[in-house]
Image (cartoon, rainbow, N blue to C red):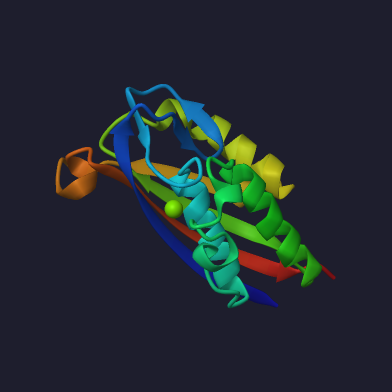
Length: 159
Ligand code: MG
């Protein structure tokens, strides 16, 4: 049996923050603003994973009003979501994702992000697909106001 889920997230780009995508720190003059480390890609992935089992969204599981979650690494949250899925008898089948950003150029970092996500999810690299696109200067991603991410995942029964 297979189930699928979709996730989407946006965070604003600001100065004075680190840019963290897929759990990797990426050199850039701006970073994403948020209560956690604002890893927009991991947030989209977590929402997709939760969606596979109709478990709500990350706002319910990790409220941005929780002071304990201030500045938290999204990797730690993803590990919790993976654990939740496992407890319910499911594991990741595959992930496909798109990060939408005008800048920085993400191509040089795609492989290390994939490797990091595969390690966290305890799957092989061919289960993790990550793409990046610009929007040709259009919209909030095109002007560099923010970065968006989309994720689609499948999960399969563990047995
Ligand atoms: Mg978010």
